[in-house]
Figure (cartoon, rainbow, N blue to C red):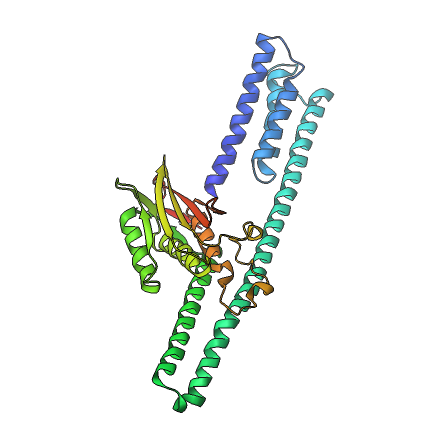
Length: 355
């Protein structure tokens, strides 16, 4: 709050000083006095436009009125508001300041309302997606558990093991989904501080591959990493979650997958992470909403398989965003999907970024 106040004060001072200097230039270098008031009116407009609320705009109008009256209006170097021209110019500047500030205040309120409406819509979409996606594994777990309780005596050990394995897999999927959901809601709540610490890229990737291999031991991930030492300021746990989510998304949804690649390159001060597969690719209709958390209509779930409704990808987008990075998805020309996100490799002045 104090920083914003100081910034607005400096904007007001700079605008008025520039207006005063420009008016002096007009008057003593070009012998033009008619446009002095116009210069200050423009300065007041800029102050009202670039600052919040009414205070700085109205203050600039009062100061500008006094400056014009004192230095550029007859009698010079004295304040006299009895002259109609001086009085009218003051009223005009104040009116411009008030009207501009009022218009901007309404515009900002409208934008805030629009942003809140969009967030509510996204929350509703996310809730629908979660409700739908939870139904399939919960139904499977309930049915499998019921089968074990009622028919366990007539089952072989292999049949029991198969049912229990299915319950375990569905439970693991539910845990993963809940973790993703908790991450995105905690970050969106604005109560989480992202603490960036210098992280060695090789150590990050080793940890990611280790976690991924625990769930998909048969899936090979080809790594293409820089030869030089790369250090990136980040919350390593959250970025690990991004990479694991995208890799798991490829295994779960890229039909026909035979090759999965994780490539990291550096471009200037940015580190670029790319996860590519040679599977079926992404539905072009879903590319625009793939990171919103809801994009799978009811018809796509008719086979009863878990889709995760992009919640994991929504988490990825949120985490990358709060790190100051960008994320995108596209279809490769050679077939398959490509997910790309970028992170800044330069240290911030303030290591703690409030989300």
